[in-house]
Image 1 (tube, rainbow, N blue to C red):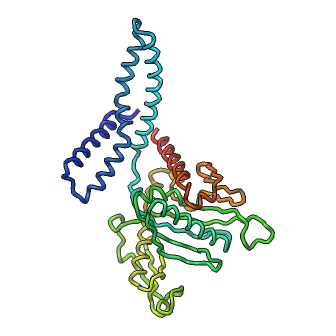
Image 2 (spheres, helix red, strand yellow):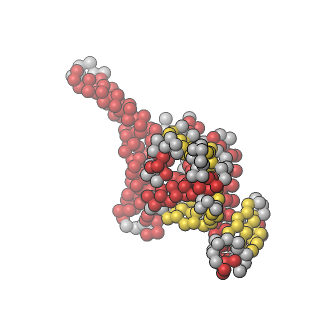
Image 3 (cartoon, one colour):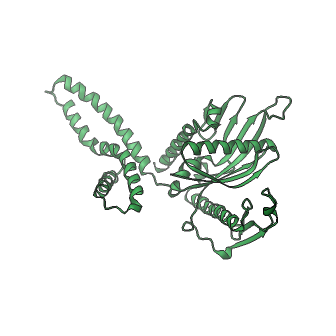
Length: 357
């Protein structure tokens, strides 16, 4: 049972923000954030009021049912209403529990996504490219901005590695469920016998860390500059524009050479490094908080096999929730990606609710 005062606080907060917005006295800088909070509270308001009124409404109906002199038709109607009231109470209680779950403060952050080819040789690099295209379509559909930070191509035209940032609204809360090992089963173009090959790629989704989120001392960094060996023309290869940054306490290393400017390469490398160090700290805290965290949805465990894309059967299966969609093409085009994500989100919420009980 949820404490009454917690539910009353939701109604009170909604009323308070409503008055603030109506008064026009809110700082324009905070207006968007306040409006969003008001909208989120509005979504749960009906459930909160229903939950608070349950005891009184239940008592009123029971009085009608227990009235020996009452009209039988009214008594029958009250019995039906009481059944519906109890059902609605359970719905209200469950929705309020989910709303009151401790929020992941990183959910509102932008994200840095790293996709790396795993087992499977050149076929794995092609799959890496397919995953990138899928996320590109998801971002386009959601009107999120995507920017490539670093890319390493294979001779087959795929990606050995690609790192990109995604900016928009509540990015990490959506993309965090993509972290892990993605496996593909299909017949490669180079396969003459028609045999199905299995390849894999690893996806890491990191919340983008700002300088206020984590302090990295200059003295903890070793910065090396070198001549770029990648594509980009003569001007790239004849100057020491490439940058390698090592975070000495953690041993994390990031190299960046996509830009012609050493300054730009350093800025991009620091962005990735900050996110990796921040994520390592998050994982450490999560492990300290709960030994079960590793087994939960969206834990960010990159060694966990999370999904299989089976081309011959036209299906995609998420192993964390045992959900199979026989619409592989639509999934890869980003059309039904949200269906999978919503199922993962619900499973994650249920696991967290079980922890509270």
